[in-house]
Image 1 (cartoon, rainbow, N blue to C red):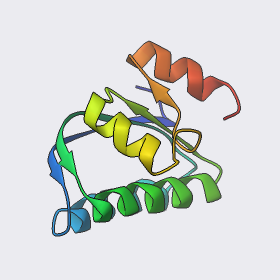
Image 2: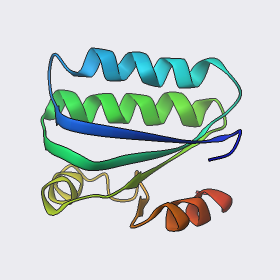
Image 3: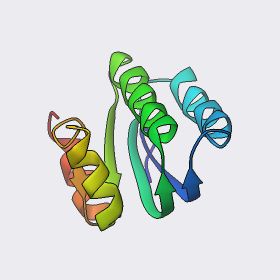
Length: 108
């Protein structure tokens, strides 16, 4: 999208075993300059506690380096998990790429 805004789409289930490849991608994103990440989760069919933990770790790693993370395409199951986990204020949620870019252009 731009040099410092990245779009990453996740498909399938985010659970123990699938977290490692995803974590490696998050680490790659953290290697360069601070990134503003739009994390598209509309293709996620399920997520367990390991998956939530992976998202939290990625968000922490990215924000500690001066970046930002916005979730996009959140379905009702993922939104319920975010609410239950108390992470609603932790992960800004966008409905579209334009909405996500607007959220990233403001201090989160």
